[in-house]
Length: 154
Length: 154
DNA sequence: CCTTGACCTAAAGTTAGGTTTAGAAATTAC
DNA sequence: GTAATTTCTAAACCTAACTTTAGGTCAAGG
Image (cartoon, rainbow over all chains, first blue to last red; front, side, top):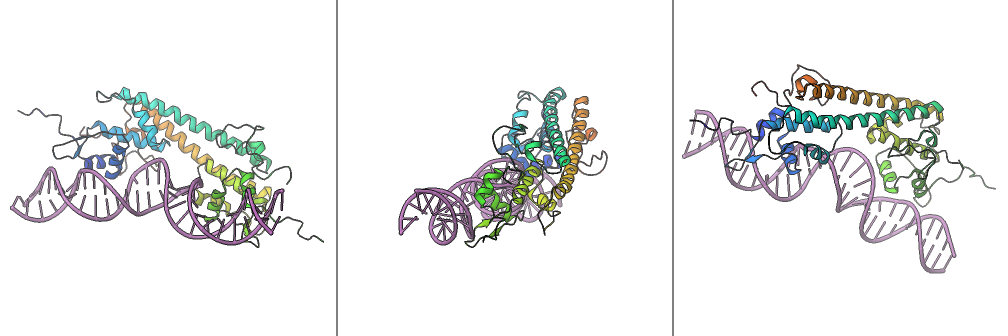
């Protein structure tokens, strides 16, 4: 009688085909701690079906601009002792949505600042605050000012 | 009598201080064709005041996610035969704004797709179309599908 | 059994956007 | 005039996220 009904897992090539990722990329993610396959008797990697979803999540999170360490961090909220349920994925996806909202907000703010600059026609940075890499948008603090060439002695 | 009243230009260190960029970065931009100083008798780089504005524009465009080649491309619309006027800068800034709008739109679309995924709780890619890196959002075309593990034979 | 294709590891190479280093020459300050 | 700074070039190094290569091993088909 067959006991191993749950199958012996996916080989890395099959996983690559299912996800669209390169085999080398999957191995790289493993080296970075993002995925942990087991090994068969011959030492080859074997993956669970749930890993397809895991890799897909990684791909999506990358589209959203997360780095691999960040994604690793997000994924660490998944249960380690069992296959993640839709509910588990839903939970971490909400976190992803929050990050995405922040990025959109930042870009939108940046765009509005640019609009101000275009409006005045001079791209004056002290006015539009675009000069601040951290997007703190302070207008009269310390740090580099007159970035667009509008220094007082010009 | 002094003829050279327009000054002999900024040294690279002075430009670096005025823009907040590293000297090495400015030289790097030159290697990439983004800025073109002249050389003094001793072979040192000399910059115009207008270059402060040019470098600032580069910094801003980078915040918007443009690559250096893209920025070079955008800057190529500036007049080469004279110092750019506010009007010139205004023109290319509008182009920048367009690109920014597109990026915001893309991210927003991505977020809405994610919302659909969260809503259904399964992160099903065939439904949410997040799987398409080019953001073409086709739902039943060719290419990788079932990315989140929802293949028919699961 | 034997061949072919998939897989293994380790190390080197790739691209973007720079920084660092080394040794020499130019400039500035006193 | 000399010392300190700045600048010069070329080449090496850096991180992220991978890919490629080289030399072997494993697995499946006939």
